[in-house]
Image 1 (cartoon, one colour):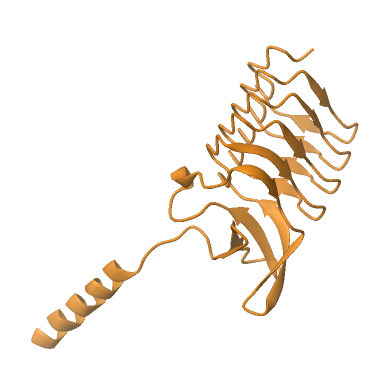
Image 2 (cartoon, one colour):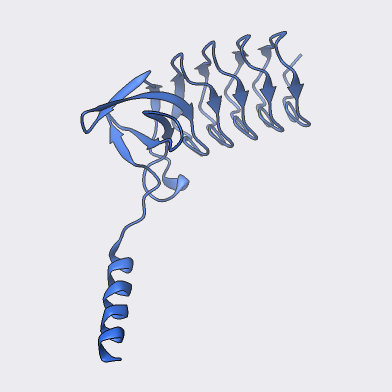
Length: 182
């Protein structure tokens, strides 16, 4: 019985010492998660164990591939809450090969003035650009088929958006609060 208690105590101490992290690795100031069901593919994510870390700022250019531990990974997604509340982020360049922008990926990026969305993107997630009040115009490429609910909600500066004919569904409230959109 004493050995079992000692073993359980040891296991508990080891579990408490493990630090959780939302990202698998970092290269050149950008954080990534390895996607489990896609061969050598990663998504951009946030630093640390909480999306409230808000470390990204200024002009960010996402590479189309990244090398870590001797393996090269394709960047195929902007993950959920990757740039959440990065209020100092001003521009974003997303490479071809990225096919989705996750839920709340750019939520609250109030200084974001420009973003390039590449051909090949198919989905823009729920609340993806919510509250990006400095975003003035955006061009959605022909490959996008789905824009989820409230994706551009609260983008008060948004005056122009180009929507492709390939779009099959725009969910409710996608452009709610976009008071300058004509």
